[in-house]
Length: 195
Image (cartoon, rainbow, N blue to C red; front, side, top):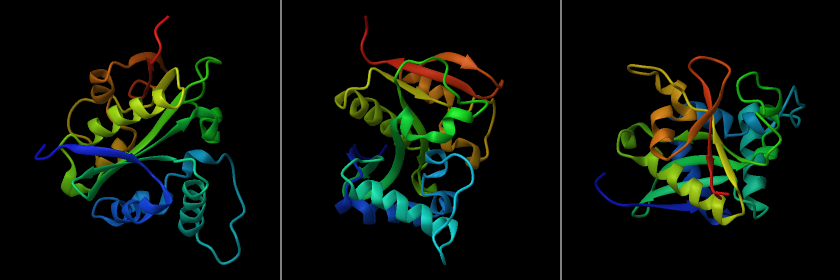
């Protein structure tokens, strides 16, 4: 990595930085989803005249404007270079019914849902820095456990599959596999408070 990254929570004042990340090359799926796919469960009614993308954007902005950051932004200097969506598991309704990511137990945990890194910044440690920043942020906000749902495949991967991060990245951060409901998609967990 050519320069140290700083990791900051998404606040209303940083909203334009998130928009810049989502508008960057290689982030078209993020621009459609706005990291809202796992915050909903089931079909929902869209406001009249709104596309799914516009509705998702408005909802994520409302969360950011409420004072509860729904994720963190990585910066190289003043340039936004990546995003991680995370928060208490209960914020992500779709996880409850997911065959792969459903709860392993009843322990309260934070969930790392996705990473968004524009093409030009990939392979430079941005996602690793976001994960480390996410762990520190979760701990600072009282989390005792953090979970992830990475991809565990050998060889080159399609970037679309890597929104969840790679198992190797979570391994390096100290996460352990606690469930594997599909061979290529483990549930991994890190204890932030040792007993």
